[in-house]
Structure formats: C-alpha cells, structure tokens
Length: 348
Image (tube, rainbow, N blue to C red; front, side):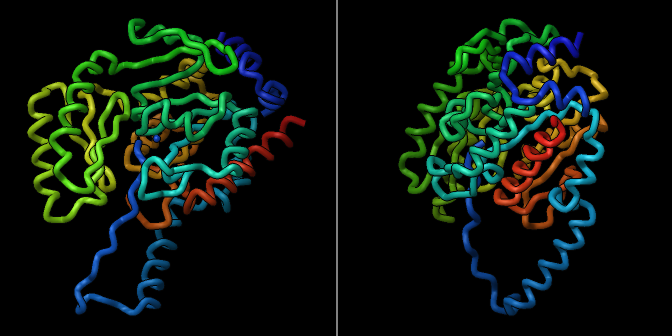
C-alpha cells in the first residue's frame, strides 16, 4: 500500500526520473553576533586564536565529519532507499543577516534546491511563517512547514492518526492538491492579541523588532542596547504571564513566544514522512540539514529511528545530535548539487 501511495505521489508531483531511480536504489533569520571587546588580559594574538579554533574544530569533525568528504560513503548506504530531503532556511539555504527581511537565497541555491526537489520529496522546515519562507524560496515542487512545523503544507494524503479538524485541503500554485496541517490553530486568536500588545509595549525600546510568524511570535533584540535588554525581557515575560497557554524559548538574539503544545520540527518531520507513505518504513533515508538549535529536535527523531542523515551547518564546534556537518550555506549548496547529480546518475 505504501509503495503504491508513494508511486502516486511521485507521479502527481512530477518528479523527474524519480520512479526509475527509486526502483533501483526554518524561524527567523539568525542574527550575527554582536562584537564584544574582550578584557585585555584575556586577549590573544590572532594567529593563536585561529590555531586554537582550528584544533577544536578538527577535533569536533571527528564526531561530526564533513558531509562533503563523506558523500560517497553516505550515498553507498542510500542505494535501494527512498531519499527524502528536509532543509532549514535561515543559515542553511540563506546566509545569516542582520535584517530578517533580507535573508535572500542565491539563484544558484534556488536552482540546486529545485533540482533536488525534482528527484526527491523535499521540504523546508523553518521558524518563520510558511508564507515568508515561500516568498524567499519561490519553488512549487517543495513542501513548506513554517512556525517550527506548526503550519505545514504537505502531501494531499491526510494522516488518519492526526486530528482531522487541523487538516484542510488546498491547492498549490500549479493546481496540485495538498493538505494544510495546523496543530496550533486554536491559539491564533490569542496570538493576534499578543502581537498587537507586544508591538505597542515594545515600541519605546529602540532596536526591538516584533515579527509575526503566524503561529509564534519572535522578539528580536540584536539591535537593542545592553541597558535596555532587561526592560524588554520583563515586558515580554509580563505579557506572556497573561496567556497561560504559551511559553518562551530563546534563540540567537531572539525571544520566541510559542503555544504550549507538544510539537516541534521533529514532529513535523514525522508528519511529512507519514503523509508521504513512509510510516515505520525501513527503506526510507531522510536527510535533514539545519543550523539552528530547533533543528536538534529533528536530528533526535532521526537518531531514534536509526535511519537517515542529520547534518548540522556550523563552522564552530558545538553540541549536536547530528551525524555529519557542513560549514556554511556555500557547503550546503555544494552538497545539494552533488546530491542532485548522484540522483540523476542513479536513475540512468
């Protein structure tokens, strides 16, 4: 049954060479860290700092080897599997920028993602609103999950194990039928009230930016003066205290307000795999690439399933459940190009 559904899906979405091959084989834009002046007694010459960083990164690579250097080995294990690709947006497909509205992806990256999506089911899971991500990516052969997975536009097949009242039918730009799944739908009225209150109460704090991400609210403070941070945080906490169904999470120079439901990027990954027909499948190979702390939820899912490749995007050593790594969006681009070429060759 699963194989028939997946065959239908490949045909419906128009994947090029997908059937022949398979028969044989977020958020919110991350802020750049503000420069901080180190105490003189702790400062080190630039060359010593570079050497120290390189040593740490080299050691870290032993636990999270480069997905580019390991590509052939990874793809050898992918033979006979149904590859499914999941991607974060900010810091993964686009560079990290100061202005969230200018996190544009390059034409080369768009082309690479498009080529991958023609061969494998591909989804972008971001903390931003789904509409914003689509506005940046502008590809119709890709599934989109915004608000950390709380707003998913996925395959037309509805998952019976999820509440039907949160699933509705929709059409994409090409007229293909899809399903929109919004598990935090009941929280929208409160989110709209909070958004209006936040914009008003934070307007007096220079540099504070409130971003509407549909099912969550992001308060950016990368441009807020240090002496104003305490006041901003207090205002946000006071507001959230009035809404017991919400909680705060933190990211890079951002405070996020989210509905208190058990749902994250890992749950979104599971939902998409199920609606693609891969429930409890042993012959699927998910690839998830992301750079944010919220992507760790998806990495954890793949680790628990014992299948697929969680890949972290980072040029600095950090704790992660990822099995592989890529340094930055330029390496993500190289990986996606190689993945598309591998798929084309495998389909011949």
